Every structure is written in structure tokens, then in C-alpha cells.
Image (cartoon, rainbow over all chains, first blue to last red; front, top):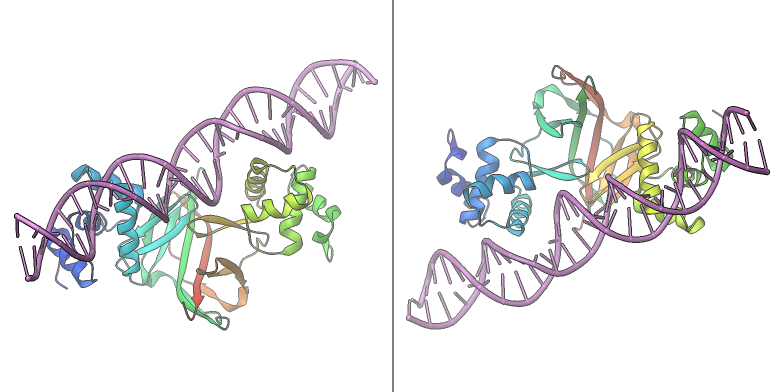
Length: 141
Length: 141
DNA sequence: CCGCCAATTAGACAAGGTCCAAACTTTGTC
DNA sequence: GACAAAGTTTGGACCTTGTCTAATTGGCGG
């Protein structure tokens, strides 16, 4: 992959094809919203951003598309807030810092934290991943 | 605290007072559901258990009460499933194993897993806790 | 141009959870 | 006991996130 691949819709289309996803108009806009910012967005934040450019993109499409991206492992789902799910364009191993008051989510660089002694997985189960979330709040609150 | 304190409604009432919570009928039943089983229950599971004994306990009371218990740090909220929150009567340091297919949540004994290199917390924020969730699925799925 | 299939759409729907005003309990004071 | 004040509980309306469905659109090979 080349240097700044996800800042153009061309590059995004490539990325979609690479994950065996048909690059349609709407899918490109949704992926662009996530990958050009490299931020954690909730479904309705994605919808807001996309609708600013493409007002006719429906709620169903946003949800369908985010789920498709997740199934194809192009993005990752982050569950930290009981009220909504965040989507993370970074699928490599890393963990999260969540501001429970402001509802914002940022990455923890992978070197800063490490898990030792992975527990034994019970029979008949296989590990899918480990999520680490450091919950923080503003000092005054 | 004595040996098997949370298997009687007496003991539960003590526990509530200890957390500065007025031990009412409904609160005792809700706490009893959680503490006598020592399991992770969702709000509607709690409601089911409580209603079997006290049919007139309303949804609003269950949610109010669980939130009250959480604010008073008597139980802990575990966010792993986008669809619902689990409540954990064990507030000591430990982490969780979540079966994403069956939707069940169990504890990881605290010795089995360890985090090193806690990341530096950005200015103006203070850590509230670290949640580690190992996501697993049945091998066949 | 035609027909096909995938993608999209609007809107109805479901589930989890919150909010509110009214009713009911409890408690302390006289 | 009577009373007022404070604290709890209640049902139901309501909100939000997210899913489902049936109908429509759009792109593309032939």
C-alpha cells in the first residue's frame, strides 16, 4: 500500500475492492468519512458526515454498510458506551481510552500497554480478540 | 464482613446500608437477585427474577435501582454487547470473557491476566478503571 | 435496448432504556 | 395518633439505536 492512500476516493475504491466489496457511491463516501479522518465515529456521526455530501444516503444503507465493512474485517467495532457503537478504521492491534463524560474515544499506542498471561480459553471456544478500554473522566467531574 | 453474607435478605439489607442505600423491599429483591447468584445479569434478566417473587416491581424501579447501585459503587457495569448492559456484583479487580454468539459473560480470575505499562493519562483526565474483555466464540460458528 | 442482479430506499418496527407526574411509604415532630 | 416533608415506586409515554421488509433504482453484460 502506498503513502497516503485513503485521502482520495480513488484510494478508497481500491481499498474496498481489496476487501471484496463492490465500490459504490455510498460505500465510498462512508469509507471516506472513516478513513480520511482516522477517527472513531458512531453510526449517526457517519450519517451526518455522509449526508452533508450525499443527502440521499439513507439510514439503512449506513447501517448495512458499516456491518458489511465489519464482516469483511475492513473496520472494527468498539463497544464502550451502552448507548452506541463506535467504528474504528484501524484494525491493527491497539487499545482504547474512553472519556465516559464527553463520550469520546481515542487510541492507545500499541507499545504503551501490554497484556501478559492470556487466560486459558474454555473448551469448545476460540478467542476472537482482546479489547482493553481505559475509562477516564475529566478531573472536576 | 462475615462468611456467607449475601444469601439472606438480612445480609443484603446490611450491605445496602453499608453503601448508604435505604433498604426497601424492591431494592433488597434486586440486590438479592445479583448477589445470591454472583452472576452477570442484564437488566431484563434481573426484572425476570425479581418479578417471579414480587410481580409488582416495575421496569422503572429496576433501572433506577441498578443505576443507584452503580453510582454507589455496589455493583459494576459491564459494557460488551451493543444491545444491552450487564451488571456484575463483583467490584474487585478482575476481567471478563464474553461469548459473542451465546451472549454469556463470565469472570477471568484476576491472577490469570495482567496489564503492564499503563498508558499516561492525558492532562485534565483521571483514570476510572481498566476493562479487559476477551471475546470468544464457539469453534464451529 | 433489455433483463438481471446487486444495492439502496423509506418507513414500519423492535428493544433497551429514560422521563415524568401521580400515588404511595416512611420517617420525624409535635 | 396526626401531620408534613422527604424519599420511593409506578405505569405509561417517550426517545434512541438499530433491524427488517417490500418496493425501487442503477449498473452492466448481452
